[in-house]
Image (cartoon, rainbow, N blue to C red; front, top):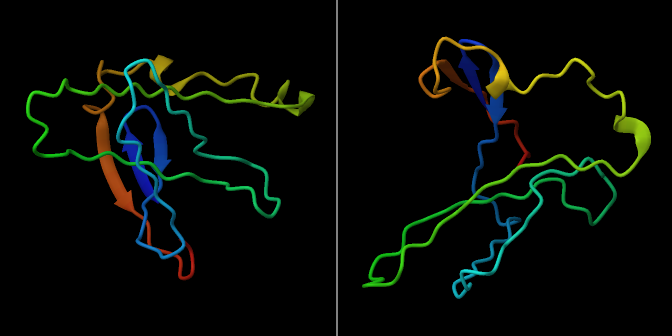
Length: 121
């Protein structure tokens, strides 16, 4: 993981190493009215249920006058039972926490790359 330390909070993002176990897909002919939805985390640990889904983006050269594509990222938490009712009653979203900076990228004060755990992908 990469630990991100801001003036008003800390967070983590996953760092990915190449693996033959990864499966990648590419949707090249999506229409503007189509949406791609994918799950990035699942707490379910049953066999056959993916816990994480990597995603990425890249530029494609030689597109000529093709209209520029747009990407909108939306994150949400979905709970399927009542266990989450009192999960975090005092939680306040980090972006709503007062900060001296209006842009959280400006308030980043440290970035720590954690060591890779052998056998982890």
